[in-house]
Amino acid sequence: DAGITQSPRHKVTETGTPVTLRCHQTENHRYMYWYRQDPGHGLRLIHYSYGVKDTDKGEVSDGYSVSRSKTEDFLLTLESATSSQTSVYFCAIREDWEETQYFGPGTRLLVL
Amino acid sequence: SQQGEEDPQALSIQEGENATMNCSYKTSINNLQWYRQNSGRGLVHLILIRSNEREKHSGRLRVTLDTSKKSSSLLITASRAADTASYFCATGGTGANSKLTFGKGITLSVRP
Image (cartoon, one colour):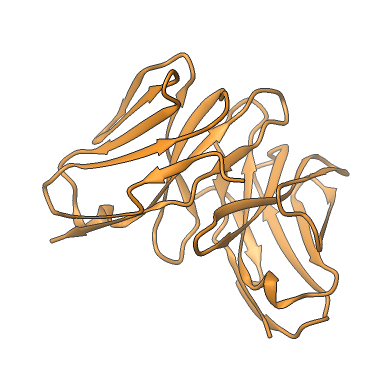
């Protein structure tokens, strides 16, 4: 497995609370991605990063922010969680010179 | 919006049979990739085919790409119970910061 970990793996939170998910890699890959996976929608890109402090929006970025202060960590923050953000969140990484993405194990988030 | 659309949505076959899964897409691509996801796990890359390639093999996997029809197929030969998983096609664009767009996935069940 690629050296990607996600924390926490499971989280239950209440509507309106802030939530931060962490993706950590040991591969020194330049690109990092956050996706959400929902039944009937497949994987949808939330945000991605192409370097330290370099991030951009994906398809479903509303309600989410990200930060990348060092190569190995990419944080996804839900400023005020809503029930529609209940989902499974996956982090992925990619080396600069290839197109293949390597996925973390996922974080299952339930917003009550 | 989803770029890739897989067909069928679900497939059930007997062990030893071949499984064929299809993916159609809408816009020009640089490459098309297939990923597998076992229940409760992250996605695992299976195979990548570039837009200037027509067919590619990897073990029991055979992928074809028809850019004129904007479609791809993944064939798994001599299926095994361990092939039971969800399969996703993902299309990649051009450019340094190109992203993958995933389909909704196909659920494959291989009966022992």
